[in-house]
Amino acid sequence: MKTFIAAFLIWTLASPRDNCLSAWPTHTACKSGNLEVLYQSCDPSQDFGFSFDQCSKEIKPNLSIKFGLILREDIKELFLDVALFVKGVSFLNFSYPICEEDLPKFSFCGRRKGEQIYYAGPVNNPGFEVPEGEYQALLELYDEKRFVLACANATIIRS
Ligand SMILES: *[C@@H]1O[C@H](CO)[C@@H](O)[C@H](O)[C@H]1NC(C)=O
Ligand SMILES: *[C@@H]1O[C@H](CO)[C@@H](O)[C@H](O)[C@H]1NC(C)=O
Ligand SMILES: *[C@@H]1O[C@H](CO)[C@@H](O)[C@H](O)[C@H]1NC(C)=O
Figure 1 (cartoon, helix red, strand yellow):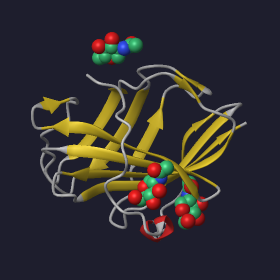
Figure 2 (cartoon, protein in one colour):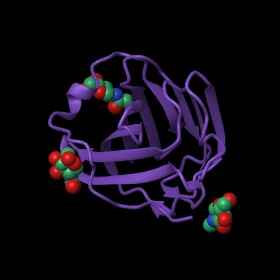
Figure 3 (cartoon, rainbow, N blue to C red):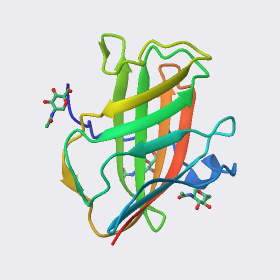
Figure 4 (spheres, rainbow, N blue to C red):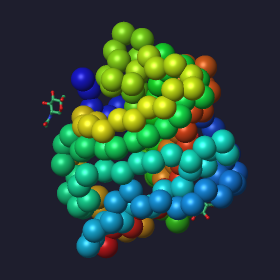
């Protein structure tokens, strides 16, 4: 299993904000003394639950996450694109394969449209320290046909 694969985003974010017009409530994925992660679903059809188990500026490898979602498509292949911004200026994009035809990394790979998936477990991430500052992130989960199954915008505040 490989770590994060840094890559340019495949999709065009001509205007990132336009992807996020719906108004789902803002959720807290993590909040502690020095780190706060807030997110909001930007998929007009559904909100979803997400949280992670450690909330510290030192992100340890194999962070455990919890994630719940109703599938609007079968998931044969699934990818996650993340775009990070500071004050609206893009500074890092990466893409992470989650389910690949020959490499289903997670138990929910292969699940069918209409099913509700719930995942709680490690994500095989690398360890790193979150630098001080406030960041915005756009996350998009999509399948091999580029159908978006979940989308979120997030704010990360590290003090
Ligand atoms: C998500 O984007 C909307 C629209 O730009 C913004 O108002 C909201 O604060 C953002 N939410 C988070 C958690 O970053
Ligand atoms: C991230 O992707 C967007 C849309 O493709 C692009 O406009 C932006 O320059 C990229 N940012 C970086 C840091 O590569
Ligand atoms: C992370 O989890 C994977 C799979 O469970 C395991 O193979 C790997 O050794 C773990 N890495 C660390 C640093 O704990």
